[in-house]
Image (cartoon, rainbow, N blue to C red; front, side, top):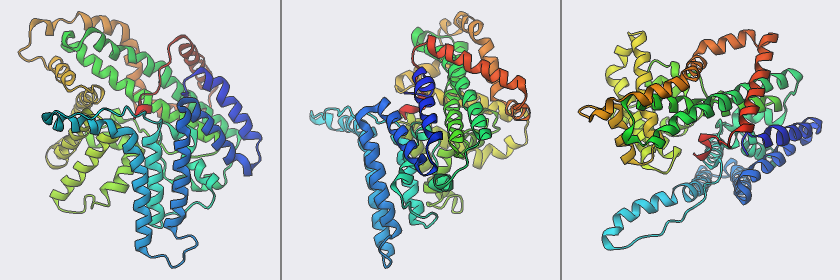
Length: 469
């Protein structure tokens, strides 16, 4: 079940909210857990037991790491408990997400001996990449004494399993929600604000991302080897908008539902396509993931307060892990390493020159980012090579310069592309915040909701792209 579905909008969410609002304060967390388990089981069946196992094991280890009932516990004992918890959490992630990837690459080595290991075909549990990072951050923060361990498994379970952020984030630290988990204010103003945020996110997903998805789908339908250079660029731009509004829309819906429940879920996007450098782009894109990697990998390795060689090493490791986190495929690793190379290039070579420009630095970002998303989207290295040969058809055959496919697609999508560009600009959010209480804005939001429901009802199910990561 996804947020942009009829079942969620008109069955699950209304029933859940009614139960949540009428429940006494002391039972609201329990209502969230029950609702979240139903939500998760609806989409992933028996793997709900894996989620429950993660909640139970990490609750116990949190108390062990904190030394509850063991006032004389040594630092070494706490460290052992920490690493055991991390091994358990990442062990599950590796088992379900990377087993076949490891087998596939091992087979490339052992095939010279005539041996092959059969693929395990492990099902990827929904949201495992997200709730794994959340529970690992919890254990590390408890070990560092940044937070106190949860004393109530219902409270801890609410943090881990809360359905708005369970499947695709935002990735929240326990400390960010600890106060809201214990007590929170629910008001009509919060419900209204949350509902408006949710509708904007729903519109971004259903009206922009899902409609833009057909542009990118056309690339493979025609065959990458037969598309023209302009059409290839248009497809890359289309996929960039599709991915952004899909994930941005989900994050807004998660924040909106959280607000309706009385939680302050952190912002996950800050107009990344308005960035003036690749480094700035990543600070604005999937903000909570970037913060996680900085706090738990980059800074412990020394961050930027070390030699140049170690800065390069630290950045390399962060981006290699960032690529792998997104998927068990070499194209994701390559995607991460491309970002590593661009960020290092900016840091040590061209960054100071870009900072002196005005329009050029934005053009630079608008050209490079769609190229990185092509690598992100295509898992087959051969397809990546073919697609880039269409993007840069130097010395190509005459079919490279045929532009009929481009003009046909542009004629169908130019209005949607303009809307996407406008919605990427910071001025759009500023204008909304300024006039959001105006009756005209409320009418527009109602229209967005109705239009979104019509699109969802009349189209096939289009799940969130980031739910598979």
